[in-house]
Length: 102
Image 1 (spheres, rainbow, N blue to C red):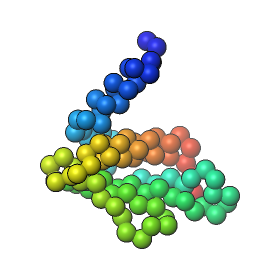
Image 2 (cartoon, one colour; image 1 turned 90 degrees about the vertical axis):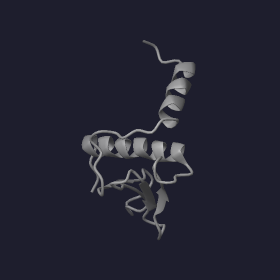
Image 3 (tube, rainbow, N blue to C red; image 1 turned 120 degrees about the horizontal axis):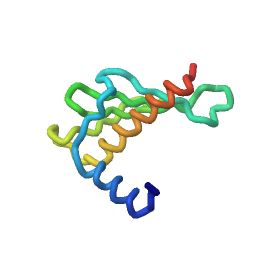
Image 4 (cartoon, helix red, strand yellow; image 1 turned 45 degrees about the horizontal axis):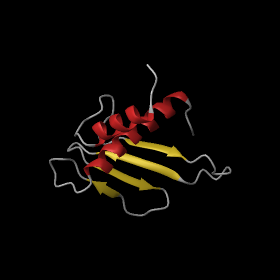
């Protein structure tokens, strides 16, 4: 089946608009990935952590305070951002399994 832009947009909205949990993602585990253009400094790290309540915490190695995006049941104001961050955590997990970094 060929993936069209129309189908991709429809699927993205379906995922972003509905609460979910991705099996295989663990709570209180940091999903981290270093940016590609660190030039050997290993700076520019994305850090995501999922709380037991489903909230997603987002941070970088340059930001001092983590940012929280609450789950659908916890007063979240940005449910689509939270869902996108869940997908980002899965992407980081899969990239780390395929191409581990130090």
